[in-house]
Length: 324
Ligand code: ATP
Image 1 (cartoon, rainbow, N blue to C red):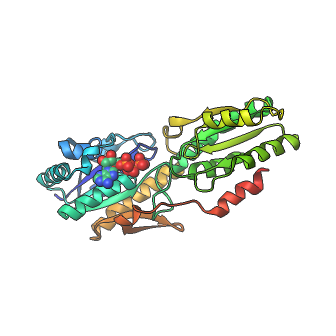
Image 2: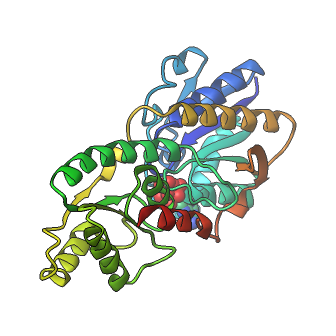
Image 3: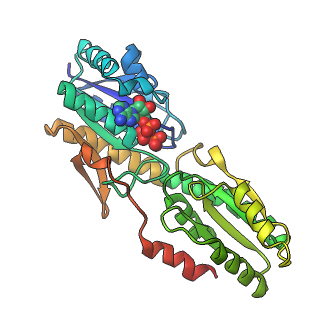
């Protein structure tokens, strides 16, 4: 019986289980067995695995996190450990490795291909949605919805008390979450690393919100720009004589990353998983699943690293037009 390996690697996100289920069920449909390695590359190095059959992925579609667990594994940057991982894969007679991960995980997988000729297939996931080469990565929609629901609640207090509130969302290097959350919540100001706003412009916008007698403002801040605490301190100091009240802040943190995936994430994760296995069945090798202009397609894995995907300036302008 033909066998494939499967890992989830990098940070967890909602939709990983839906994708695991899709890969396992599609493989099963074509008479292929799936070997799931535990904790990503760590499981490959330590030969820690479980056989995933049709039944073992029952009831997981709606669950956040990953039943295979995930980990950061610094040892994978070392050739000796990659060799160990490859030997484990070969000893199990595995024909191809499916990696549900971000661009870091894809780099690790690519090295297995380059150094040992292993067939590796990447399925993109990351709440940040910044993987180059694909317009969608599993987990993003749920993260945006999680953040939106939290900000809607914060907005009740913000409006009732006529406050200025900074809400920090995830996005270390990219502003995709902030951008969409800003639009979905009607934030007065959205701050993302790709299009930095000078402090005096932020101040002007806050004062404009006050002058228009709106009385309140939500500032959605991507964590890559600054910490909410830091920004609140700076703005409170700079605006202390302007009668805007105390600017408060909230860091949403891991709440964004957990919980049940949205319908969109369940569907995309399922489609990505089925597509990956079917392309593999057709004989395609060393590719990543990508989403482009409404279509799922395959691209060379190496396309995903070395470059950064940036938000469209047009989208950023929409937020500016609609806010203040
Ligand atoms: P996310 O950013 O969404 O958490 P990711 O896959 O980019 O996902 P990383 O932490 O960057 O997450 O990478 C996951 C794992 O991939 C690392 O812990 C490491 O084991 C492996 N990896 C990353 N970069 C490399 C590299 N250059 N060479 C070999 N392995 C790598």
